[in-house]
Every structure is written in structure tokens, then in C-alpha cells.
Image (cartoon, rainbow, N blue to C red; front, side, top):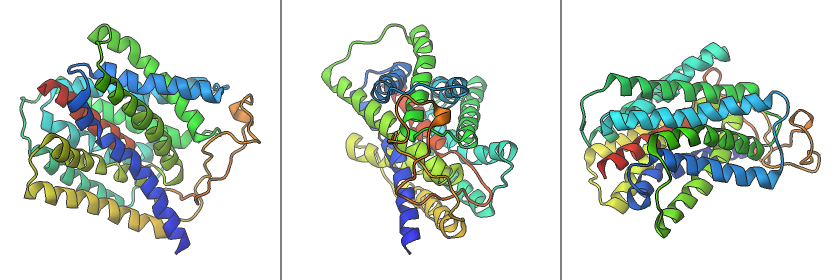
Amino acid sequence: MEDNRADWANVALTALPAAIWGSTYAVTQQWLPPGRPLFAATVRALPVGLLMLLWLRRLPKGDWWWRSLVLGSLNIGIFYALLFFAAYRLPSGLGAPLVATAPMVTMGVARLLLRQRPARISLAAGLVGLVGVALLVLQNGLDKPLDPVGLVAGLLAVVLSSVGFVLTRKWSPNDDVVTVTSWQLVAGGLVLLPIGLVVEGAPPALDLPAVGALVYLGLLGSGVAYVLWFRGLAVLGPTSASIIGLVNPVVGVLLGVVLLGEHFGPVHLVAMLLVVGSVLVAQGHALPSEGRTGKAVAWLPTATTPSTSSSSASVRAVSTLPAVSPSAACVSSASTAGSSAVSARTGAASRRR
């Protein structure tokens, strides 16, 4: 019983980033300048990553220089750029269903890179969650004809980010989760910076509410959320985390109803029940059946891992929560479904304004 409680605590901690990312749509609609998604994405990633890096004073060592660049580009930089490009060219209702395919895509990527075969319950939960997300967003209709270039960009964003999260699991960094997150945020932000300057030009003028919104999206939407998310990947595994991430559009819809006065009807309710049900069924199946062999996770550098030590010499600290290995066979990326679904809606929101 204690183990199950601790496991569900891990699930709750991993669901928190998806909930935070679900608020991005409403925050963007209310307070950010319209038409500047790449600027917003860069400001979300780079400043908080630099602050974390200055605080920790830990730089990558050895292979983790290029690994951080690869993971930061796949998980944040190139992912955001492709996703926002797709969001401006595709119908607003297609963004979230498109990126909600991420759990299924990542199962395939994990099969290739990690030799892990997806469990049937995970496949079923992923499909049911995908149907729920599609119902949830397609209530707004399709306001543009399908653009093949935008569709390819959106699918490529899903595939690349899925590869990024599987590689995050495969490479298993020895450093604490906050340090590794700071490296990826800085790398992803540096990749986004020149793309945003070329595509959108100089940064826009910001009023006080916009600054507050960017601080919220940076500190919570990137700093806290990615730390919790990468920890969830290590503790629960990408499969369980991916399906948890499907709650992201649910939170976005609820906040849209509360803050923006958007319509909520019976179809929305059925869709939300499908999504939440798929998450609970998938986690309920995984928790009792998985062995407690997952890797331990350190939140912060400890006394045995001084800030001047290299990543290869770092000692792995033990998490206060028991680690759980991924489901017997499947790996998927909820972060993709989380941050990408929000980002697509963010692009659509900017377009409508």
C-alpha cells in the first residue's frame, strides 16, 4: 500500500508539468503580444536556463556537451520552431490531435532505440486518449484547409521530440535533474534565438502584464515544469509519462472556459472523461505490475557531488520517492503531448488575435 501511494505521488508530480503547460493557451491569449510565438518560446527557455546554470555553476563535461545540445534542440529548440511553423499553417483544431499522437510515435521510437515492445494496455490507453483529445479540440472546427507542408512540419516536430525523450532515457545522465534541465533549456533557447530573430525580428515592447506572464511561463512553465518532467521520465519511464501528458488539453479547455468564457458542452465532457480515464487505466496497470527497479533520481547537487565536479564523477543521489521502471515494454513521451499541444494552441491563439 505504501509503495502504491508513493507511485501515485510520482504520477501526480509528473502530471503537474502537463497541467502547467495546459495553462499556456489562456495565459498567451490574455497577456502576451500576438503573433510572436518564437519570441515567447525563447524567453520561456533561455533566461530561466541561464539563471539555473548561474546558480548551480555546473557545466557539462565530456560527451554531455554535445548530448545537451542534441537533447535541448530535440526537446525544446527545433521542436518549438517546427511546431509553431505548423501551428500557423494548419487548422487550429488539428494541432492538439496531431501532437497527441506523440505517445504512439514514441512507442515506435523506443522499440527501435531501446528494444522495448509496447504493452497492449499502453497502446489501448494511448489510442483512447488520442480520440479524447481529438474530440476535445475538434469542437472548434477546422478554420483552414490542410497544408501538406504544415502537416509534415507538425509530424516532424512530434517525431524529433519523441526521439529526444527516448534518448534522455537511454543516455541516463549521472548529474542531478535540475542541472541536466538547465543544460537543455540553455541549449534549446540558444537554438531558438537566431530563428526567432530571423522570422519575427526584434523583440516587441512589453507591458507589465506581459512581463508577468513571461515570468510565469519561464519559471513555472519551463524551469519547474521541465525539472518535474525529466524526473518523471527517469522515475516512471517515458511510456507512463507520455499518457499522463494527455491531460494537458483538458487543463487548457477548463482554463479557457473559466478565463476566456469559451463554450463547454456534452462532447467536451465525454472527451475529458476519455482522456482522464485512459490516464488512470494506464497508470493503474503499470504501477502494480512494474518491478521497483527504476533508477534513483537526484533533485539537486549533494555534498558528495560538489559543484566543481564533472558529470562523469558525480555520485547519484537517492530520491525520497521509490523509483519505478517503465511499463514492461513501452516507452512514450508525454512531454511531447504536453508542451506540443499547448504550443500548437498558442500558435493558433496568436493567429486568431
